[in-house]
Image 1 (cartoon, one colour):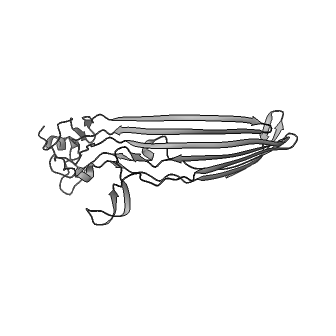
Image 2 (cartoon, rainbow, N blue to C red; image 1 turned 135 degrees about the horizontal axis):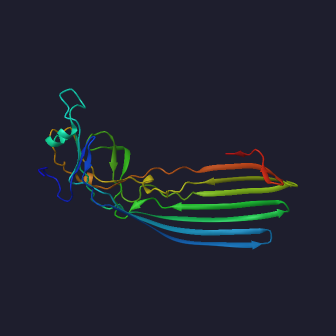
Image 3 (cartoon, one colour; image 1 turned 90 degrees about the vertical axis):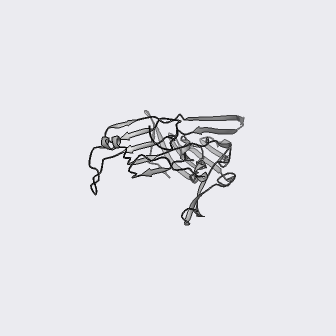
Length: 283
């Protein structure tokens, strides 16, 4: 097609403003696997109902992004001197005058791996008629994210960028991107008391910690292909060379949420149509 120094592995993508685009990206894939081991146990003894359980999760992902090594080219207006957004966009396309171009290349698959442990114990105790106490404790642990091949990177605000000489740079540390957190203890307390006929008082307290595992895996990591950009070139450019640093796969971890504390107080009264709650207090 006369475009210099581009890959022959795929057809380029051409976007002509207001006229649409044609071309296609290369294939991509994303595969996730979860292996789970779980067991629960319940014991009823006198006024106590004791429950306990454990779950082990092993999660792995294999993801490769779509790339366009032959280029994605955008054509805007012909832009008369000092008069932006003028002319016909299709004329730019016929003349080969590119407004901007992007070349993406995927050099590796994204392979994050981690473990998740969960353990709980709970006792539902009825010390007297009309009174039930719920006493429980949950503990969770998730191993810090790391990829199978060590291809992760993170932003360090104190590192010196070799290109600009200023603070703030992408680094490539070995091993996990964060320290292990073994302190995720989450107590649960509950009370239900029928203090008068047809009346009940309920209260609860608990602490919850946010798991690292989320519905959308990219909320924890950013999976990025190396993407050089070119703008405002008078003719169709060839792709810039990709440095070894650009070839490193980016997998930047965001901070998890902190623990959440909650408590609740409610009262309710039985009526012929059912229980009617009174105003409650929640945090």
